[in-house]
Image (cartoon, rainbow, N blue to C red; front, side):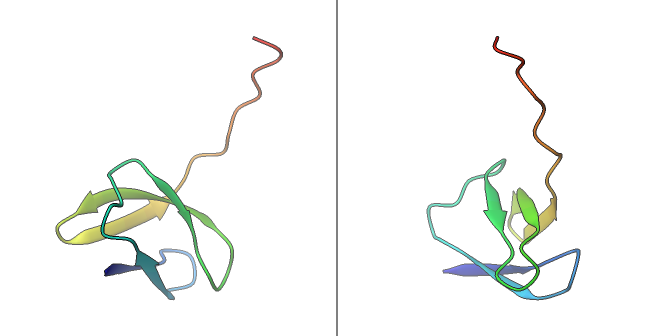
Amino acid sequence: MISAQCPECEATVPCDDDTVVGEVVPCPDCGADLEVSALRPPLLVLAPPEEEDWGE
């Protein structure tokens, strides 16, 4: 298992071994949605907000 640091609150965020770049994971402390931007070394960034699809 790998872990990375939350850019929002600096908590340790565990990631499964099958985590992939682009996956969104929640921070267990502050609840922020974080996007995996790299695996070696693991790096998390704040995920962009989801956009409305307006029925498309």
